[in-house]
Length: 322
Image (tube, rainbow, N blue to C red; front, side, top):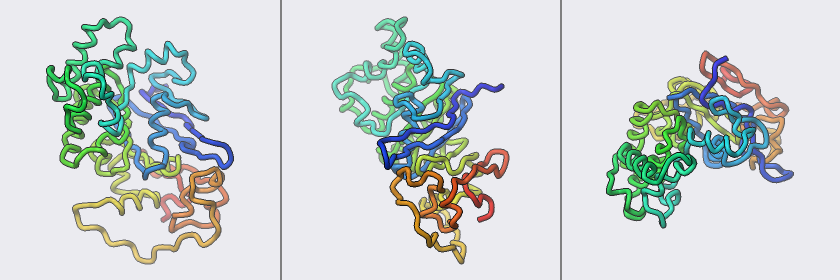
């Protein structure tokens, strides 16, 4: 049986009591080394909670995260600390993710403190090597974060993620806080590092252009659930879920937009649960309140996930029929 680098099985994270908020609600996916999975969806759909679960920064309500064959939430703390060297995270805001009181050399070397075999000199040498990999210099080791631009700070954050030589990097909106001109530089850097070191990326973003640039596969997330998964080319060329289509329609494109199809159905004209992410959606399609194709059965049972090809899955009662 093939062992994947990363595997999520029925991952769920619920908050509060009744009404319960289902931030992540039964998510499953697999990743190989060197691959990039882009998770897209609007703010509040559960993307960042999913990232925290994969990083074992939060414990799931249900489900498992398996990294190189190890169930992260079944391991003892000592084993989990050793496994953490293999996966690191790049956070969204380069201004908030770096301690302003620490010099960059110490910030970048922070993950190396998980390895007691490395001495102070070795940690500094590894930090210098990581900074060089992201296009910064040795002199930057002794500078403070406030002495860098936003793009340079994000390079420091990437260096910190790389210093332990991980196999997986979870990038949570890694360029959203940067100017557009700087975004391209950081994305090119991420691609270069992936090709050079065979890194796997779990890329969290609301920006479809960013995901299209980096991802091999895409998972579209809505209200804590994956509503569509597939290869990047397939998702952009042949989106099958109504929510995926709406995301693509809302994305600014340089080319001439395609005309909308005439005769678009009206939204469901029957009472629907509140659109607040709570447990009132249990047993119903989470997208029914906004879906122009919804029918009464969308409120009576959860849609099954249907395979529409070798690498294309859609969670919809009418997948391939609308």
